[in-house]
Amino acid sequence: MKYVSHTLTALLLSIGLVAAQSRIQTSTIQSDIACDHCTKCESCGQSLQKSLFKIKGVKDLTIVEDKQQFVVTYDTRKTDIETIRQQISKSGFRADDIKADPVAYEKLDGCCKKR
Image (tube, rainbow, N blue to C red; front, side, top):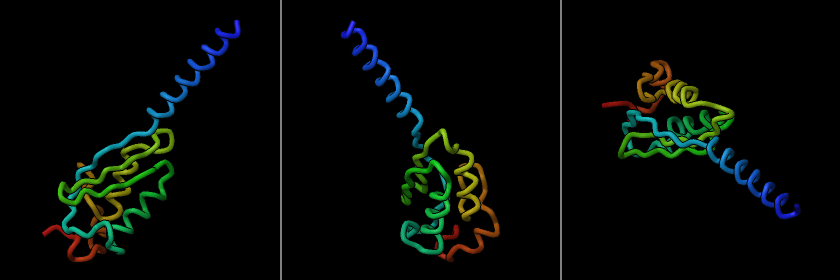
């Protein structure tokens, strides 16, 4: 009986770990990053990062400048990809099929705007 109890406990813990891992998702969002310093630029890249990390559930953001992509890791229990795309748009960048907010875009540094 003790063996069955330990086996059952181990099985339930394994199922719980798999369920917890599947709640963390990484998505790639295509954008139109126009310069190579968006990760450091205070008015653009750092502003974007700050605004994304205000969304509960966003765990990580990587800007892949040469591919013009944002790679975002987030907890699906707390947010979704659409909310993240909307926030990127509000920061002045295109996020997949969502156009950049025109007012936020105008506030970007000149080098961060499409040429």
